[in-house]
Image (cartoon, rainbow, N blue to C red; front, top):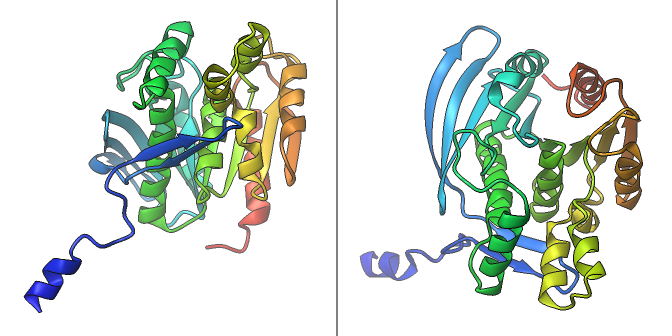
Length: 289
């Protein structure tokens, strides 16, 4: 019996390492090993518990913060926009937890917080393309796996539907993560759109791998893999950073079921978006405890 046990040891469906691939259309696929985690409880009361959770990934630690009731109806992986810090979301996390939803803020790579990395921009894209060409992991793809790891953590802890919600730049990462991970329940993009990297690369006359890589960075490339899960897009007509027309064009590329909502404000997630989103989810989860 011991010999047989040894022979079959390790014969599971769990891959030996995380992997990625990009098809001819630029669609990114990832297989992400669940990451080990460390958790520090920061606060707890009868409404929710707040914790600092570190994902120990294949390429460095990623810091997250969780606010959750004891038995949430659903959970959120929140992906912030450029420069967004946890401090701007403290009240939001409590609001979602009080409404019955677990809210996990992911301090993404290169966003200037506690997680190391290069900010998104020309330097990062060039570094990532070099990694892509050599078969290494681009930081962009690592971030997608971080979000998948965050979803795996929430699914394992709560066994509830998990949505990816992203604001501005975060909405771009979130869309690709939902496309790459069929276990996400749906996608919410706020004040977001494609990057425009693909258009720039093709306009410069590039073909082959540069085009395939650029396409893999664009969130709309993943829309075909999100359907039939829901897509909710929120955008303000007064957005001074990502024009409303860009957000609407982004929405038009999504597959059904989808919903577009104009919200009051300018750029990024705000209380009006929170209220509208919580109303939608209340209709879905009204019968859940």
